[in-house]
Image (cartoon, rainbow, N blue to C red; front, side, top):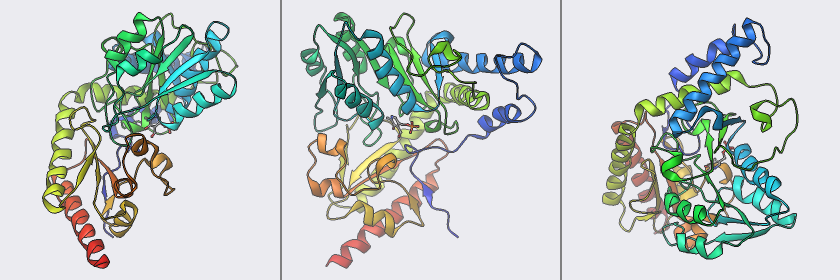
Length: 382
Ligand code: PLP
């Protein structure tokens, strides 16, 4: 059986061998509870501490500013609901962009249903927010602005540092969902100027089921779950030691591979783009031409339905239409709609995302499969 070329690294990544190796002892003999004061517990607590320090180092943060969570969705919920709970009474307004992941939009809408005002900032045709629109939306009672670092569908990178300069000057907190940028481009919380930042382990070679929220020291945030006080009371529950160790190992790998990895991803991605442009007349690039994740190629094939194309070459290429987290419907992607894409361009869209282990041979095979698939579908129409 042919193994399809995996070009869906924005949906999820495999667990890196080094990450698995680091985790295994914590699923076996090093099983202690970090809260226990005997050697089993101390070993587990040390491992969690080392993992926290490693994640912090990836972000230019202090270890005490990292809260481990179960996923990026949970980190985003903690950021939005936690800040809202902490500032309720003083503030009642939130700002998000029109292209946020549901893991930000949904908690924001939930807060709106509780009486918070919500401003949703539009994006341009490349999926970028204009910082001036954020400045115009801020109010005296704005608690938090949440703008993703990089978009999961088209890969557009937002001008977070420029937005941070505005929010900081107005005394408003800034959260960024960096689930897609971690491990692909360098991340530094001070250079970005953010107060809170979300990570997802399974987008950069750690397992599914672990994420983290960076919380700058002094940021007002209240717990949204209650228990025995682990993770500074912000994510109580006995620590998932193997997963935390896995996230720490993935952060170390990302540190070692960046920034060289960025260039490798970009060159594989651009080779795929060039091959497709040569083979498919009228191919349209979605997302920003330069301010974009180096691994992400989101294109619209003219006269083609993306879903039909991917199903035709299902055994040869594994990719997504729109975003894998919610791509099982035929509705036009909210991100493409926000960018003003018409229905046929949106229908023809496919997201191709490469990873560290993608090879030039895979790029060649995927480009051939995609162009043959397009030609086959066009012939059928004629
Ligand atoms: N935020 C972004 C930008 C994402 O791409 C994703 C997943 O695709 C998430 C949040 C949610 O991640 P998880 O499903 O791991 O919670």
